[in-house]
Length: 101
Image (cartoon, rainbow, N blue to C red; front, side, top):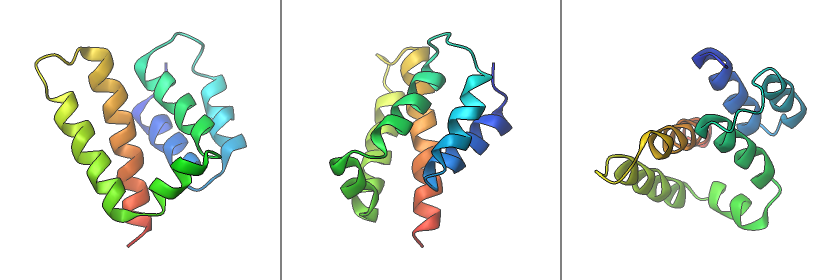
């Protein structure tokens, strides 16, 4: 299982398009299907997606997605998986938003 520091490091690599480094960190994580791992793999896979690139180039869209994920993870219907998955994406968006200042 990855530590919080390793997760942050992996998110930083993804945010800066350093995908081989991010994949290397994930190799130590195992294929356990956790929400965090699934979110990280999804982020890596989506970095070359045209619509994701457009979203990440627009601060307002990133802020909107972050608000939506925060609201969703705070819902009474959100289970632990949803909360961890959303938290990983929110951390990623925080990095991207800070970088775009």
